[in-house]
Length: 121
Image (cartoon, rainbow, N blue to C red; front, side, top):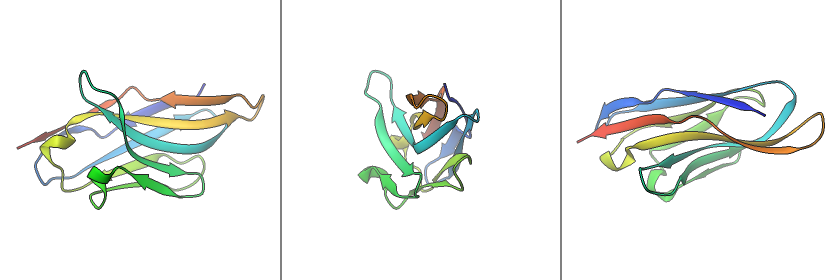
Protein backbone atom coordinates (compact mmCIF):
# COMPACT_ATOMS: atom_id res chain seq x y z
CA UNK A 1 0.00 0.00 0.00
CA UNK A 2 1.28 3.44 -0.90
CA UNK A 3 1.68 5.83 2.02
CA UNK A 4 1.05 9.53 1.37
CA UNK A 5 2.42 12.25 3.63
CA UNK A 6 1.08 15.79 3.29
CA UNK A 7 2.41 19.08 4.53
CA UNK A 8 1.94 22.81 4.05
CA UNK A 9 -1.47 23.60 5.47
CA UNK A 10 -2.08 26.43 7.90
CA UNK A 11 -3.80 29.73 8.58
CA UNK A 12 -3.67 32.55 6.05
CA UNK A 13 -5.56 35.79 5.45
CA UNK A 14 -7.88 36.35 2.49
CA UNK A 15 -5.82 36.93 -0.63
CA UNK A 16 -2.82 35.04 0.72
CA UNK A 17 -1.06 31.96 -0.57
CA UNK A 18 -0.19 28.49 0.63
CA UNK A 19 1.63 25.58 -0.95
CA UNK A 20 0.66 22.03 -0.12
CA UNK A 21 2.94 19.09 -0.81
CA UNK A 22 2.38 15.34 -0.81
CA UNK A 23 5.04 12.67 -1.02
CA UNK A 24 4.43 8.98 -1.74
CA UNK A 25 6.56 6.38 0.03
CA UNK A 26 7.57 3.00 -1.37
CA UNK A 27 9.20 1.88 -4.60
CA UNK A 28 7.21 -1.03 -5.98
CA UNK A 29 4.35 0.87 -7.51
CA UNK A 30 3.42 2.87 -10.55
CA UNK A 31 1.32 5.99 -9.98
CA UNK A 32 -1.10 6.88 -12.77
CA UNK A 33 -2.54 10.02 -11.24
CA UNK A 34 -2.35 12.17 -8.15
CA UNK A 35 -4.66 14.83 -6.90
CA UNK A 36 -5.99 17.01 -4.14
CA UNK A 37 -9.47 16.87 -2.67
CA UNK A 38 -11.06 18.84 0.13
CA UNK A 39 -13.73 18.19 2.68
CA UNK A 40 -15.63 20.29 5.17
CA UNK A 41 -17.21 18.73 8.30
CA UNK A 42 -20.40 16.90 7.42
CA UNK A 43 -19.90 17.32 3.69
CA UNK A 44 -18.65 15.10 0.89
CA UNK A 45 -15.05 15.15 -0.23
CA UNK A 46 -14.76 17.06 -3.50
CA UNK A 47 -12.13 17.33 -6.18
CA UNK A 48 -9.78 20.30 -6.18
CA UNK A 49 -7.22 19.31 -8.83
CA UNK A 50 -5.67 16.23 -10.40
CA UNK A 51 -2.60 15.55 -12.52
CA UNK A 52 -1.95 12.46 -14.62
CA UNK A 53 1.37 10.70 -15.15
CA UNK A 54 1.51 12.44 -18.51
CA UNK A 55 1.06 15.86 -16.96
CA UNK A 56 -2.57 16.50 -17.86
CA UNK A 57 -4.35 18.57 -15.24
CA UNK A 58 -7.94 19.03 -14.19
CA UNK A 59 -9.35 21.65 -11.80
CA UNK A 60 -12.59 22.36 -10.03
CA UNK A 61 -14.23 25.45 -11.50
CA UNK A 62 -14.01 27.21 -8.14
CA UNK A 63 -10.20 27.13 -8.12
CA UNK A 64 -9.34 27.63 -11.80
CA UNK A 65 -6.93 30.50 -12.25
CA UNK A 66 -6.00 30.54 -8.55
CA UNK A 67 -4.63 27.05 -7.82
CA UNK A 68 -1.91 25.16 -9.68
CA UNK A 69 -1.13 21.46 -9.32
CA UNK A 70 2.30 20.25 -10.34
CA UNK A 71 4.54 17.23 -10.22
CA UNK A 72 8.07 16.88 -11.55
CA UNK A 73 8.49 13.21 -12.37
CA UNK A 74 6.95 9.80 -11.76
CA UNK A 75 8.23 9.47 -8.19
CA UNK A 76 8.21 13.16 -7.31
CA UNK A 77 5.91 14.80 -4.76
CA UNK A 78 2.78 16.53 -5.95
CA UNK A 79 2.26 20.18 -5.08
CA UNK A 80 -0.76 22.44 -4.90
CA UNK A 81 0.05 26.13 -5.11
CA UNK A 82 -2.93 28.07 -3.80
CA UNK A 83 -3.08 31.80 -4.51
CA UNK A 84 -5.74 34.43 -3.92
CA UNK A 85 -7.22 32.32 -1.16
CA UNK A 86 -10.79 32.96 -0.04
CA UNK A 87 -12.60 32.05 3.20
CA UNK A 88 -14.61 29.49 1.24
CA UNK A 89 -11.37 27.62 0.54
CA UNK A 90 -11.24 26.69 4.22
CA UNK A 91 -11.31 22.89 4.44
CA UNK A 92 -9.26 19.82 5.18
CA UNK A 93 -7.25 19.02 2.06
CA UNK A 94 -6.45 15.40 1.20
CA UNK A 95 -3.84 14.05 -1.18
CA UNK A 96 -4.82 11.11 -3.39
CA UNK A 97 -2.83 8.68 -5.52
CA UNK A 98 -4.10 6.04 -7.93
CA UNK A 99 -1.93 3.40 -9.52
CA UNK A 100 -0.87 -0.23 -9.39
CA UNK A 101 1.80 -2.48 -7.94
CA UNK A 102 4.77 -3.51 -10.08
CA UNK A 103 4.79 -6.86 -8.31
CA UNK A 104 1.26 -8.15 -8.77
CA UNK A 105 -0.56 -5.49 -10.75
CA UNK A 106 -3.06 -4.86 -7.98
CA UNK A 107 -4.43 -1.35 -8.20
CA UNK A 108 -4.60 1.07 -5.29
CA UNK A 109 -6.42 4.26 -4.40
CA UNK A 110 -4.58 5.84 -1.45
CA UNK A 111 -5.33 8.89 0.67
CA UNK A 112 -3.18 11.06 2.89
CA UNK A 113 -4.11 11.97 6.44
CA UNK A 114 -5.35 15.44 5.49
CA UNK A 115 -4.04 18.91 6.21
CA UNK A 116 -6.12 21.83 7.46
CA UNK A 117 -6.28 25.02 5.42
CA UNK A 118 -7.96 27.98 7.10
CA UNK A 119 -8.50 31.31 5.36
CA UNK A 120 -9.50 34.18 7.62
CA UNK A 121 -11.64 37.04 6.37
